[in-house]
Image 1 (cartoon, chains in turn cyan, purple):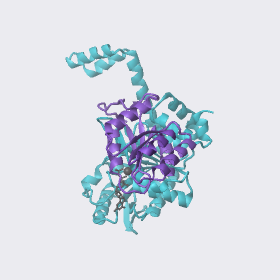
Image 2 (image 1 turned 90 degrees about the horizontal axis):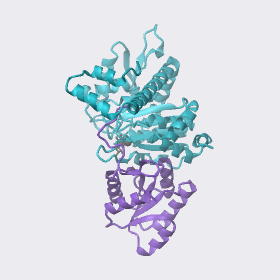
Image 3 (image 1 turned 180 degrees about the vertical axis):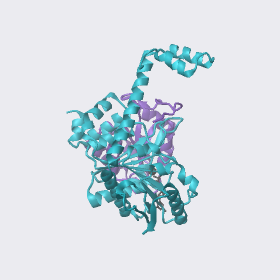
Length: 333
Length: 148
Ligand SMILES: Nc1nc2c(ncn2[C@@H]2O[C@H](COP(=O)(O)OP(=O)(O)OP(=O)(O)O)[C@@H](O)[C@H]2O)c(=O)[nH]1
Ligand SMILES: [Mg+2]
């Protein structure tokens, strides 16, 4: 039996070995991804991003517990932490906050180092997610590197993206605005037990109002709700709700889980689920194409030839586009 | 996704068997209080180019083995100061084996009396380090264990 077949029959050792193969982008890993691809596309992928220390891991811990207890969903977690740019090593510490999930075979947590990728994920995170999806995990939580502003990669990968804020971290509108509007499906103000929550909430709300000036948005039980104009269907647009949580105490978790479920429902009804899926697969395909074409180019054009042409560009004898034409020499035209 | 061209893709921490970075689980089983030593070792291993999964305090042997499985590590490092090593370590090794991870190398740090060393070696512990051990020694021996 291949590792992929063993994985499909529920073997955890095969699962963990395949995750490693895929993470390291080995030929075995690629073969497994190909073999398992027909089994993917079922899981709900939830991205969790936000500045360092806002409580992403603590929230993932609580959400996973909630999904297990309330709905018995099988939950996988992929948690990415940064690699050192100098040594390539990493300390991956997200599991420290996920102790409560230990001892439950319905939960599987995998830590990953970013290995030089920017944008909050590792290059092979999407591959790991596919393996979990094929292995039958219903919900996959993806925690990004806590880098700060716009972790666009995770929004491209996930169906539902949570952006986690905490009181006191640059509560001015400008700081918050950068990037999060494009990516947040749900905004979470964690550490709501800390002073300054109201300021953070207010700042987030004003940012949202700027983004959706034509919508009627009102405050109701701490959440933003949308009143759609009579002629538009309710699902025509999603306005990110803002929720308060205290991850350490488990406060606000079931409300957050409800919003996540509501977002999944919205995606399915509106057709956005399929649209996101298609665009995600499109960007994965593009990345693979780029990689393959560049590799093929390097195999076909010698390094010295490349250096010669680069010299000509450096001497201003050739413009870059002329150089490309010369190097490709009729290929791909 | 963009790659930082400056970061080394292959450090010398690549385990030669599979062409991958050495993955190490650093855990603190037992009930004793602090994890300073474990954190120092975790950082030293990172600085040697390894990927270190840090799990924190008060881990049971079951939690250690489960994390080792989920993270598919090459090495498990246990920091034990409580004197409970003769109860905890054999159990961890037993569970690793039961999970099909008998190839995982186990290292122990802490206050381990000399008379316990033969037994620990016998059950398959690769290295034992006292409080005064240098991180260079630990790194060297972890790397050496990967080439076996
Ligand atoms: N007071 C308070 N502390 C919290 C809350 N949630 C998390 N914390 C604490 O905040 C610290 C960081 O929490 P993590 O869950 O590790 O945060 P993170 O965003 O995953 O951190 P990185 O992965 O390092 O970016 C820990 O000490 C938590 O105990 C909360 O709701 N209230
Ligand atoms: Mg974290």
